[in-house]
Length: 169
Image 1 (cartoon, rainbow, N blue to C red):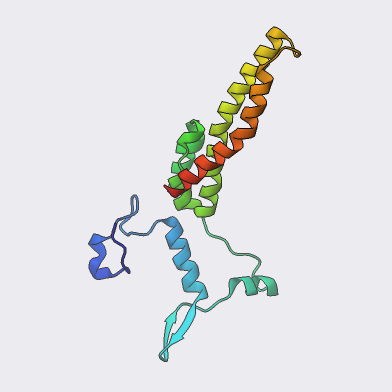
Image 2 (image 1 turned 120 degrees about the horizontal axis):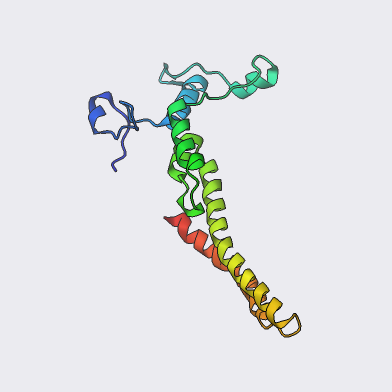
């Protein structure tokens, strides 16, 4: 990808959003709208920006009750179809769709939750095997508990190191 300031003359070279004739996804449009509402920059005696409204200040003073963005029904339905209607394994979450709709922080939360849940499978399988071994030989002779406790001590280190590697990509 090539990154450059948006220019109408170069419109055809910008990647378009899904189903729209412009290069801005929902989250970028929301950020642009907020910037137009809140900014009021004066540079070289020419006004650049928007309305100059401080929405947080207006909310605190009681002039407005709250402000929020509206949902895009098509994008919301696409996320719902790909995430809720078709249950999938934790490692197949639509994190990119979540990022473009809800933002980076929410997508990062769900990506980490999916990663953590995926790693919990290994811990659960090892614990199940150790429980079966204890049931077969008895608690006093169960060597599997020793290995399971070691695995439980090493597991979070391995999981977090794997997450660090996944964050880089």
